[in-house]
Image 1: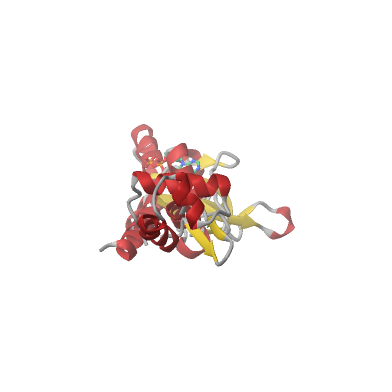
Image 2: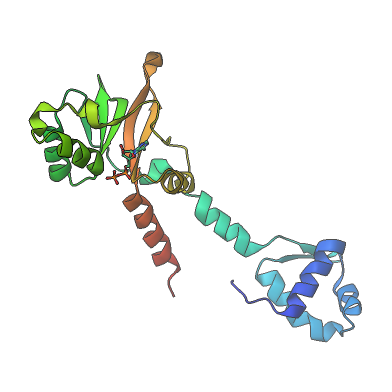
Length: 213
Ligand code: ADP
């Protein structure tokens, strides 16, 4: 239950937080109100999750339910459950191959890998535009020339929260993050997924649809 706190609600919460467990009579006394006047407020605050009532003991402060809810909304979603399939090219692919892959796979960023999916680089649309300005024949340019390379790549892991991923996208001003895990035998990081601004936007809309009135 989501409620708009009144001035009196805030006073009650402050008293219970500082002095709880405290009886209803004591709270009423403190506010110079009758127990009967106070009763509906205590009921509302208990139902809304701010207070806990124990028979014969009194009221306890139970926390701020909207802060808990917000924190659960933000931290309760893992990369593992929202990541999409990564689109990868090998390091010896040409810039032309990369343009075709971006177009056919409908992505704005490619991950460049070696062997069985070990991350070596990230190639964005603008990386390709930049190389195209200097060398019009994209069939002669390997992607490795145009990409941002390890260890300068910002990544996330399966167990990271979507909030961590969104924060990295915003802080680092990139569109896409490879989801990685350590490859066996210390060979580097294996690409197992991708989180993009679209992934975060989709989660945002999904959350909104659960909460619409
Ligand atoms: P665009 O360049 O198309 O605007 P981005 O903003 O994602 O796309 O990329 C900006 C630059 O950052 C590019 O040079 C790209 O190679 C690099 N880049 C993209 N994603 C990452 C990442 N996860 N980690 C490090 N660098 C990245």
